[in-house]
Image 1 (cartoon, rainbow, N blue to C red):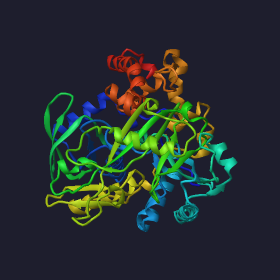
Image 2 (cartoon, rainbow, N blue to C red; image 1 turned 45 degrees about the vertical axis):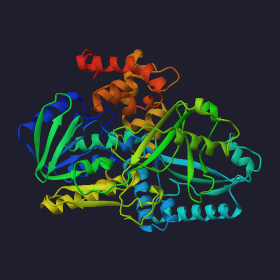
Image 3 (cartoon, rainbow, N blue to C red; image 1 turned 30 degrees about the vertical axis):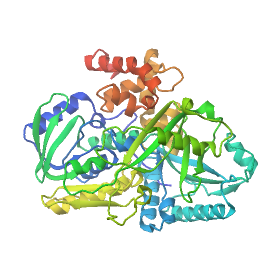
Image 4 (cartoon, rainbow, N blue to C red; image 1 turned 90 degrees about the vertical axis):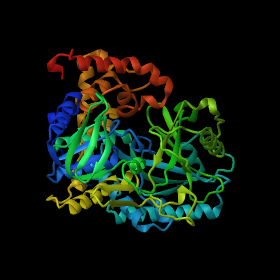
Length: 534
């Protein structure tokens, strides 16, 4: 396995820290007429990836978002870094291989603190025929060949294997024992938190000189920049740039004409861990009547379990925050009921969220009507004014999407840039597994902050008030909220509760945590903490 090194110490350099003062200063510079080589619109995974790619190639960069880091699709994923097995099954060999390669990049080089191996059990229930089970076994073997072709170490992703009924129930006691013939164990990449990946990308880009500007809305794009509005003050200005990349995902068509997307909604339920027993693995529960679609059950390690996902087309206007239809909730509960030994009803759902995938519509009138069948290939499109738009794809391949988009922008605008470095560039907090394991702090913090975990933990050691949980029974502490304001660009309660932490996916917990979030913002904005504590 590669041994990622990082220039970022346990406490971040000033250049890697994002806060309100830095945002204000850098926006003023751009409003004053400073021109950048590349303007990136959208700060999800792909947009933050473009900003990092451009800045690490020696280009000057501004990256803006109307809301916050990971405000859109990038915080609503399944949290999985897929190896491409699903695409292999549908004959998309190039997409499958690309996914496997990018999974290995994240797990072994750029973000081993955020992406780890996740075991999954596919239970062989009476609803899974023997021919379907044989097909699934063949698929898992093919997936392991994908891992090998991508040169991902066996130590990173263990081999799949068959489980006896006893082993299957040991890993997932919640499964119904009647008719259970065993299970299939497989491994895939799993993010501790998708929004934290975006935060790490943005901060690493900032450490390379990129200006990361949230609450900055693009009103109009052209080949020479964008007219923007500061959403905090209402002031409008122009950002001048030699190249513009539109990485706004499902909202791309609102800024550039002739972009045809078919957004797809993926829904996840939030359940209490105690309602599903001691799960030591995730579950792939086959959807009755479907040959290659599953509901995922993902224990989060914080007292919650996520259950998803559906794949339904979305018509009409695209909302900033998608609603979760009751039909999706009922569907997911019904699939759970087909395999579990517990009865879960609507009252057991303590939260739910939905994300929109920006699938490229190339089907035409006679094409598939199901978004589940649309390719996850991405596309890079350049309009007559030279604005580059990147659409399609998925979270796993954000880095390659960013590279392709930037390559197109460099070519279209004649920029002078170095080669892409991001396949070997560790993100803030990254280090080798050995170094991460040696950190003398709670493992939960290491999985979220990597080498910065000791600095986050130290806040609580110096001030016991910061060590207390924000919400009783939930592991996030006040120190993590303060850290997010000081170093991760959090500007309001939503940034803190819905993206830097995921307290907000449970409405009851969000309401209980609002006071602590407001106090963290008030103290930091007022500068009341001693300078040496910063």
